[in-house]
Image (cartoon, rainbow, N blue to C red; front, side, top):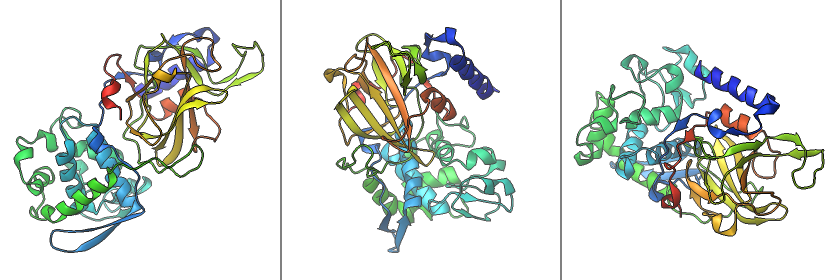
Length: 388
């Protein structure tokens, strides 16, 4: 019901001329943000990775498996208290339970086959990366067929979806002092408690490989930048900050007065120097001057398995806090509002380009709502602490 109400609010916002100046908070609910540490920022995902288990078996993981690993890492980076040790435990558990595959279970839950999956298992009534059971209270079938939800549930804690029952890793007292395999077993409660230790070196290899810093080689529109699936989508302005002054679509150009100007983004007016945020985890491909635009930041993301670029315009030279090739996280402070280029005053011009930079823009307000974007309270965004 809340989502329906939110959609109706967006429709009213887009269709009512009198609503030209409204707070961002009108269409996005406030939520806190977390910033992953640099060591847990996911880089490029290789097509395959070979690693050796503790008992000497060599295994090769596919890109699909590594993409799920990247999701586990990204969610861990956004969850307070997890750190590298907790991500290692989660990777060990997922490697053991599903070989890092999203597994349906159509024998017990036929509807699970309707969701994206990597295979159909038949282990009682278990689902997904961590083989979680709906009957044990881990979540609904729909929830458990979402790899991000499963990762959040495994980590648990105050940010987890289950309120400590069943217990996630952060709900287990002293888990950091445990052997990683024992910690994994404490969450999974398996009939084979010693099997997790075998995958510890594989988990460490994955974590080291996917979080190793890599130089940015991608260029706008080149299609050469590979980006891990984002852990979430947020609003570009902190909640309650910035006023919506110009929407996507036809308008009168504010500089020339021309009546037939198609506005490819959304404008948020705010005081000069106001910080704005990356809307998703991604890799910066532009951080500087673009002819005709003034200063710009362009970030490539993977959202719902699809390539998408977000673009931010008009900041001053000193208002750009990222550089090409840098990995950023959703909610990270990446720049400050300015008025460079084709601009009549301080504001953020924000665009969304499905398919990547160079592809046509879409209505960014609608895109944010469709992808469950949440707001960020003013003063809570990461600031320079989350920069390079």
